[in-house]
Length: 115
Length: 112
Image (cartoon, rainbow over all chains, first blue to last red; front, side, top):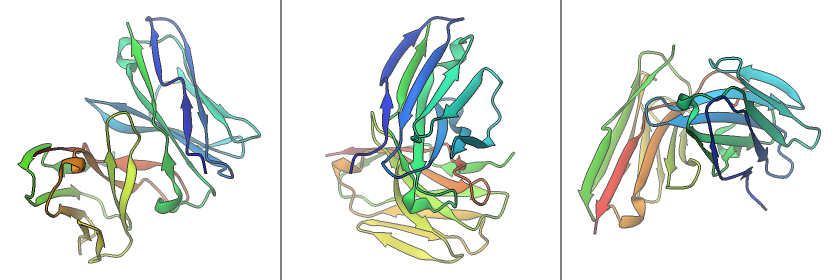
């Protein structure tokens, strides 16, 4: 069974640009969560989608947005990039809305560098 | 907001040594999780704890859910080079959500 896949794995952008990251969950998983990982702030929750609806949102500015498609694939978008947006962006998928730790799996992440 | 204080921040040990790390919070949680992250990968769940006082093992790893429900400990016995990575404690932010609150992580390096 394939794991969570994220594309691209690496990305370099300049300030002011926008970026779209993609996450394909494990087959049959309907919930996707996104996290930002930085050396200073650690792992922070961005948002969660289930059945194409945003269910939960972290404390990030409106420049960070996401969506989920009918096949459960998810994208996140960051507009007007800032240097501080440089981070590893991780997504995690699980099969149901009800959370159980042992059914949630993380992808390898997309490393975004903003110059 | 809710925060987890994880220590130590980093450890550099000799192969074969035992390792201990812990995580504390000012809030009570009903689930404590321990993850490991290796370079270029996302976090992988090592152990999940669901009951205060619970002691759970996974091979050479042992984790405990503190009786106060405000802390948890992870021990690694007889460390080996492949134990290298970042270890995170985490708790669910709320029920029925994939939101996890993570500790700052403990970076473990093992000298052969």
